[in-house]
Length: 413
Image (tube, rainbow, N blue to C red):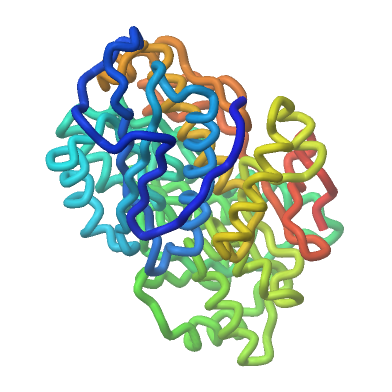
C-alpha cells in the first residue's frame, strides 16, 4: 500500500501534492503529460447525510495523499475536487455536469447514498465516465456497465440482508418473534423492506416466511422531522426486534423520541446508520445491530493484512482532527477506500485515463482492494461482486462484527 496522510478540510477541496490544474490530456503513462490527474465528485458535507459524508471525505483525502506519496497514477499527481451536494439529490446531477463539462475533470468518484449515486450515474453514463461508487444498494437499477460498486451486498440485497439478519438473531437464546419495521421511503431502504418492481421480496415477506409476526409496518418520508408519532406506534406494538430500514441519523432520531416516552425497544437493527451518532446514544443503543463490510476489530485487521493497521490508525488521527463524530475506520471508510482502490486499479490496468479503457480493464482484470481482496465485476450482475457483508453489534461501547461466524470478532448478544 501507499504512505502518509493529508491535510485541510473545506466544502470544496483540492487534494494535491503539487501543481495547479492545467490541460487534461490523456496520458499513456510515458511521462509526456505531467499535469495532475483530476478526480471530481460530490459528497454530502452538509445536510442530513453530512455525518457519513464527512467519513468518506476524510478517507478519500487520506487515500489521495498516500497515492501521491507513492508517485501518483501513471507518474502524475492526483487532485481531488469535492463539491458539497448538501444531501440534496436534486443538486447532484448538475454538480457532476459542472465537474465534467466545465471543470473538465479526468475521472469521477461517486457520492454518498443510493439516491445521489443514481443521480450521478445518469451523468456518468451520458458522458461515458467510469463511476466507482461507495454505497449504492439498488442493484437492479445500477445497470450502467461502467459503474463499479465498492460495497457489495450482492445482486439481490433485498433477499440477502433480511436472511442474514434473521439467521443471526435466530442463534440468540430467545430469538425475536414480534417484528416492527420502520422504513425510510428513500430508494435503498425501501428496497430492502419491500423489494422492487416485480420482485416483492424483502424484510416483510421473508419475516412472514420464517413465521415471524410483523406487528408494525410503517413507512415515512426521508424529510421526516417529527418522530413522536412513530415512536408511540413502536412502543404500542411491543416488538421483540425493531428493524429501522433507514439512513444517516434516522434511527437515532427514532430512539431519542422513544426515550422521551420512557421506552426502549428490546433489540434494534439499523440498516445504514451514521455509526457515531448511534453509538453515542449509550445505553439506548447498546446491543444495536447493523450491516458492515469491515470493522477495525483485531481479527479483521489481521485478515486484511498488508498496510491495514497503518491505514486504520492514520484515519483515526485525521478523522479526530476533522471532528468526525465517530473517528473509526469502519464499514463506511472501508467502502470509500475500496472505491479509490477500484479507480486506481482501473487506471493502472488501462495505462491511461481514458474512461472506456478503464471500464474495459476493470471488467477484464478486476481490482485489488486492501479491505475486500480481489474483486471481479460481472455485467450480468450489474458489477456487484460476491458479498462480504456481515452483521455488527454495539458491545461495550464499540461496534464489533458478530455474524457470520467465520468473520465474527465476538458472539452476537
